[in-house]
Amino acid sequence: MDLRKQLTKIITTFFYFGYFPFAPGTFGSLGGVIIFCLLKDNRVIYGLVTGLIILSGLIFAGEAERIFGKKDAGFIVIDEVGGMLLSLIFLPYDIRLVVVAFLIFRILDIFKPYPASRFQNLRGGWGVMSDDIVVGIYTNIILQVVVRAASFKAS
Image (tube, rainbow, N blue to C red):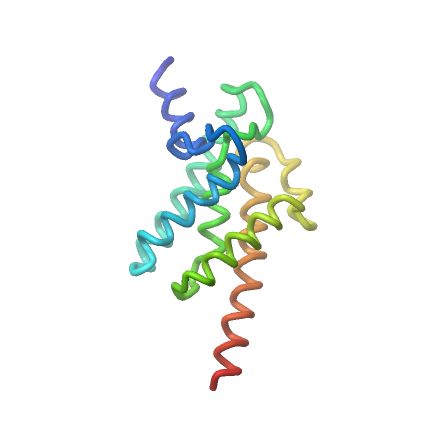
């Protein structure tokens, strides 16, 4: 297998997280949580890594579909990693918040509320990534409201 195909598999399966025998999307999301926990103290690096992962998914996911011969194959999990990172961006670190973000993101990713469901019909990397980007933004908005409501109530 050539280097480009190997690199595409490594990136889009997020270092083979996507090959877990069950719930690969859940393990991909867990990859996003791990990155959050590692980079939570440096918002600039966190933002750059989030952008890099999303950009990598947009670039490589369409190629991965060609390699795997299937549209948005289950083992392509770079979209879950990027979506989970968006779910947690600009939020304070609190393990309870991380768990809630993970659960909300997974539920929304499964049900794909409008317009997320429409975005997955796009072609190539955009079709793979955009529904999870939207779901990550939904999750983040929900949690931003909760965090602000809790801090408002506490003051």
